[in-house]
Image (tube, rainbow, N blue to C red; front, side, top):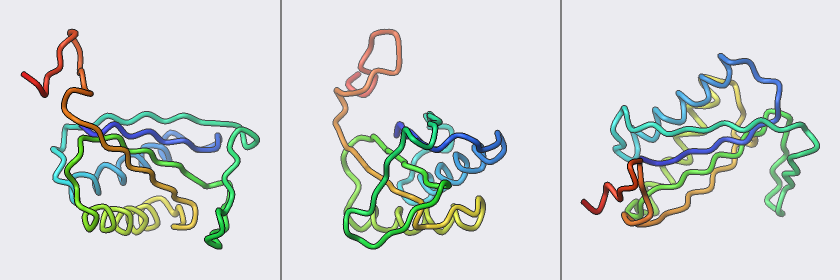
Length: 127
């Protein structure tokens, strides 16, 4: 059920994008216990001038391989689970896609059960 959005600079192949999505989903399943078929992922590709990602004072250098990952999910994961997720995700991406950890930014946004409708005008988590 997490909704995951990826923003990348255009130019990656279909297989590179699929490897990125597969790696992220593997870690969602592993670290957050998300069911394997609970997969909602959207990729948006941008020209290089449409993404300005600067340092914020943390000393992190970026390349054209940068990826912004936004995870929206129901509340309930602990701080420790999130820290583990961030670490495991960059390790998996580095191992399977060659995206370096300095090129991965993740934002997790949490909400509640009434905030989701999967179709048919119903709030499935409330039924």
